[in-house]
Length: 460
Image 1 (cartoon, rainbow, N blue to C red):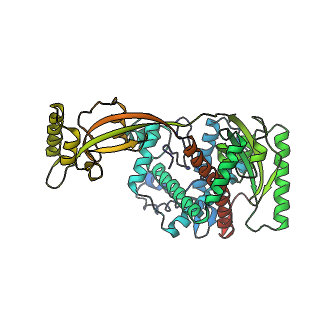
Image 2: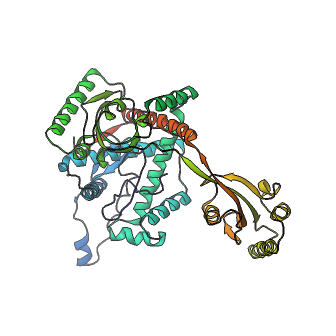
Image 3: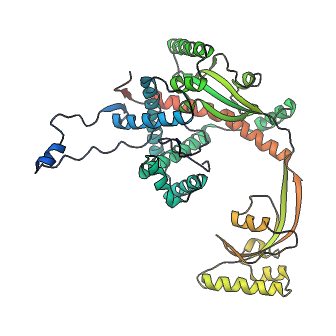
């Protein structure tokens, strides 16, 4: 999960929340329970608050298999989406068009959540709490202050938390789908690396948006003709000056429609195969003619380009440590006293390696005198990395605590190594994965929708 996440049911407006990642937008979750029956009125005031017989409290916007989306839910999500679009300075489409777009994405979210239930995909409270903590940190507040901040934006904290949980569930579900259906061979990886090296431009990144006019799974000639007609109309609107992001909000059936079709920064090798030859020939601000794929018809726009051709250098640290853990026979206070005593011995001239072998509770390094070998940045937990970064070669830390226990750390040496080749291989893998994953997920969503019972009660 992206370190900073905005649940799809709520957007940013003035409360800035950031999400990266790869999933469709919409409002998720089971519909709220019907309101309880009105109490028997015992006073004129109570009677005045009781709905008159036959008053419509709510209505159904759509039926999705055995689930329903209520009109009140749809209205709430439409209002929130309007706030998001205005915050991004994206022109609002006609109200009925926006309502249809939001409803379609809510339907897809319900279908994915139902699939997650069938597959047994769940998210722990700890995972949700960690995501909330990252959101709070990103916005410069503590987790305790997050409910108040949301309240100032008119957002209910419990509903926000539920929406966040739903989003994480859907991300985990889509990762399962990719694991089942996306496979990368060694040959593909080697071919991609040769292609990257041959292009001489494998570090260039492209900021891309798209409008998708989708066709159903196993489309008929009529389905394709209707989609072609629709995309041609959109293309003419763009040529006449319609804003691309506004057109995406109004017409796109892609996962990022309500984000103006923005699919983020991609290297050419990470773009869908259909897009790459077109995008790489564009200038920033250009958009394409309609492009046809198995998923439907696409219009793509190049928002911006950035180029880089630098080596990837990594600073490694050679370190050793002594670890003292608390246990059933050594409580936290005693563990602290033991590490302090070992530190005093080291300051008095004791041999670090011999003390580590005799007293360290890290079985992996104790036999090597506490030696951890050469460590890449991020190879250890953050607290350990922070302590290590403060030390010069030859320096020794005071006792400090991490989730594993109490440590004394000594940095032995540092070196810079060239990781360009390894980085290129990782990038080649990521490029193939990114290129394939979008098509896999889009095809899976099309099948999911084609197999579902969907009945619209409005907007059709």
